[in-house]
Length: 477
Image (tube, rainbow, N blue to C red):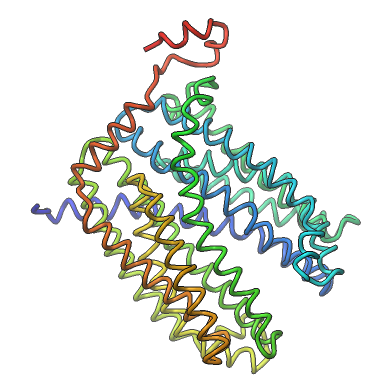
């Protein structure tokens, strides 16, 4: 297959057009939790400890899971859009909203019982109580976050990304004002920061929903509420559950590393350093997040349109981008290794430890960039089940055992924990590359078009169908 230079240039432009705004959206959404913690930090050590624990608990038990479930739309919406079945995007979005809303009810029950759950995990009782109070005030944000992810995926797969960036920016700016008012000017304290999260997420949902409702760009894809999302829920869940597992299995591993760092000698130092590394890694991940979402959209669009050659080109381009970005990121981390620790602490022991960790951290960020691109490719093809199995094996059969052995048996401490993560990334990347190389793009295009045909319904089927007998609805082509 001969690829012309102009085709490569055009594909690079398309992916960067998507990736840069999506990266910005990721950073802006990530900043909401960070801004809240910054304001709470001025209230004292206990409120900050409780808010930090609640935020980590919320990410593990709620936000990550909802984002993963909504990621199934990368396949359904992207391929339907590529096939020209624009009205199906609204159906897929409603179906996803229904699923995440139902799941959010059960997650809200978990959040409401954060304090006893943390206490059962032998966490400090005073901090657990503070975390439980913070989590309860964050419950409204749970429902908003799930709906927001569905709407963002709906727009992303239509290549509509700048409105997402604008509304996320407005919500982030409003969040700063809300935190100032609710934390310092009211008597809510840390609860005000949690409530600010909820308000900001709902503001973002309202703003982006207004865009979908009134923008001409969504006229074909949003045709109104329908009963049809109630059907074929099983097909959606067959992709949604593996999508959630792909993301959760990875994120849960990092949280497990933080917990294990508390079992090391001098746990205060080890936990502080690992937390700094994790925060740095999360910040660096926002760039791969952008091009992972971009290639997922490009691959799913082209497969849905029956263009396997273009999908294959998108894969080659994103892997090149990931490699170049990884080299640049590694270089920056190495250059900043002696000063980066001072961003978080003035303690020389902490900053020296962080400096020693930077090469390991840079290596893991490079590998994560490659696997993020590969994960996006699998999502665009609808092969999330493969990703779930690979992540389960790489992180829990390889990564965690290696981390335990290197950290506790070889006495490499925090560096050993992070080297365990690197071993998981290596296995993950090898398996992902194996599956991508063996991919038959013509076959994937046929599968995509078959998936679109199975899910396609008449664009005229909207809420007014509820006025018709159910038998009549089934006869609509």
